[in-house]
Length: 349
Image (cartoon, rainbow, N blue to C red; front, side, top):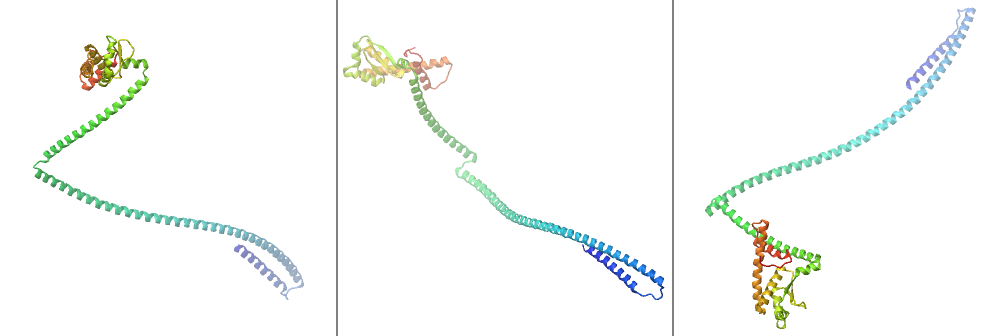
């Protein structure tokens, strides 16, 4: 903008100087000139004046154009300057924000670095403390090993035993203690298993009783014993029922005497006990002497006989199955199950 204004002023000043020279030259007298010469000079002066006027007008027009262009350029330059200033302001704001962000980041980094330094210092202090503790533990372990060795030597000296002998005695002691504890554990387990087995057996028997038909139950729990005559029923009952009460008390079997001719019923869920009662009653009827003492004797003989039969039946079952070894109680239990294999009563083989 300043360069355009300067050029316009220079042109205007040059035109003014040219015009002033022309005017001065026209007014200066020339004594030595002739009239013809003066006429020619006047015409030249007029021509020069008109030309100067034309030049001045053109110069003014050009100066006006230059001023207009300079003004436009100045406006454009001002607008560009405003835009540049706005851009500079925006850049400055952005730079300010970036600087603030950078300062905040630097502050956070400084804080983090300080925390890391503090953490590193704590770790180094802890590592140093751990090293010291490890050294102390190593020293203590060495002292304990030395004390253990001294204690072992002192024990050997006091007990007059070597380490191997003491170790053997200790092993024997521990072995005996372990056997005793194992025996106690086995006893507890057996007791618990027996108790649990009885509970499960009762449950199974109860479920079986609930599910089995009435006819089958009657056949399984009742045995019929034929009598030589109906007068035997009175002897079995006894005076005021003492014989039948003694029989049921000793055998644990219910003796049912009804209107069935020449027969009585023995009722019990245990087939072995029912068979012992049947043998007892048969002996009493055969002997003819029926009283409480005689009932007890007959019961003991029948019980011994049935137990032998159960044992023999269990052994026969093991032989048939090809089993050579089994606990005696299991053999007896297997023989007692013979009464449940068939509806026939247990009898000698």
